[in-house]
Length: 311
Image (cartoon, rainbow, N blue to C red):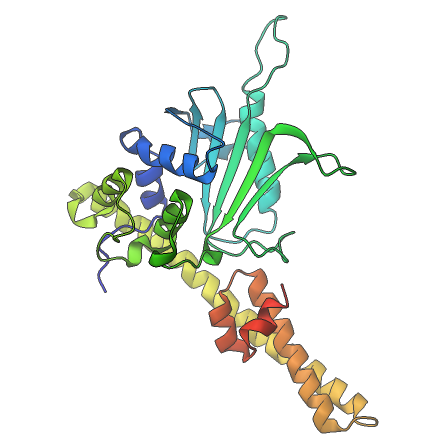
């Protein structure tokens, strides 16, 4: 099927919709929806997305989108398609740049800082510290350990697990629901859904329609899609390899356990239990890689309930 609308998970697609001055009303709408009325962003200014360290040999950071609102609050917005072992560390590191750039030279600065929001839009299930979380929106701040009260509210880290959003069009209620539906499904749509009638979505679908691209835009988008597909294929290859290795290892462990327990429970029961443990181990590995539950059901033979219990 030929796509009608761009894939917002691609670098070109994400920055076209959310990273350009021309379409900044889309980002404003998304931010206000994400914060459920706690933010009232009226305007934003895009800032330099490439941040350099304090020294020549210091590590730099390149953000997908970096902006500030009319109150001087900073927002880093990242689309992340591939699971990274130290992604949380990366977001913490990224937040140090907008903190440090607020430092004022001279002796009059009282160290007052404006809030910094680091937002990760994740095209995978984020296992680290969220294994038992059922929701797809996660917000972290510095807290006091004993009381669990917010200790410092000017540093906020938001992680949004796009694959976990499973609402259908008829179930969309809030603007955040609608934006999440767009982020997950835009490239699979052939027309604008009836539930998305707000004016901002008129703008979005106009900007997302591939047939309206000029030659240069089309070339940039195709290159971005190819890069995205390479990533997806690499992930699938790694998943298949890990599945094969995990199955072989699990079967070996299962057989060994079956023989050990054969003295007491019989080889048949031991082998069955070993195979189930192997399947659970494989399923857990796939969950950590962000593979969908539906895919894991097909790959492992476990039920959805059994897989959900592994989180």
